Image 1: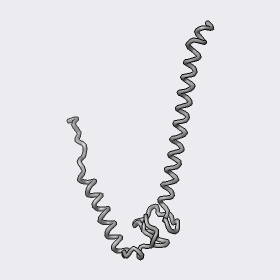
Image 2 (image 1 turned 180 degrees about the vertical axis):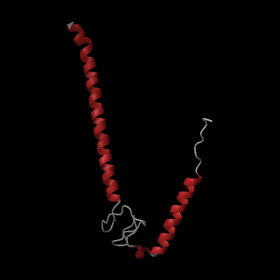
Image 3 (image 1 turned 90 degrees about the horizontal axis):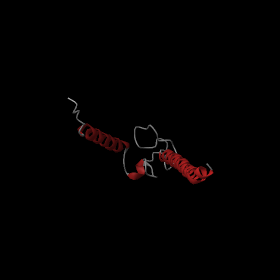
Image 4 (image 1 turned 90 degrees about the vertical axis):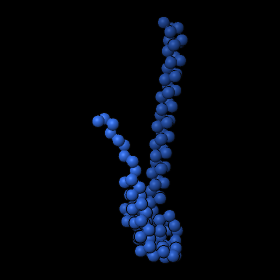
Amino acid sequence: MGSIFGGILCPLLGVLLGIAASVLLLRRSRRQRYAEQKQRDEIERRCARCGYDLRGLELPRCPECGTLWGFRVPLDELGLSEDELRDSYERRRQERADRGANSPTPRDDGD
């Protein structure tokens, strides 16, 4: 009986412990990447100039300082009016909606 324990069970136990350790490290790594991505997303939703929270805005412009999302200068320094920005933003939104409506839908071959 001593030879069975030493010959088969010990190596098998070592392999199982190695697999368990690998799974735990993988889960920890995924959690860490998720936390880092969440932090990056939170930073990206803030105005680069004043730090205002930009989530849920109709236009990609900071209402606090006027900076366009992704820029570090106010809208008027870029030479754009709010009407031009609104028109451009609406055109882009409509183009995306049109592309989505024109995309092929999967057929149901069950009939």
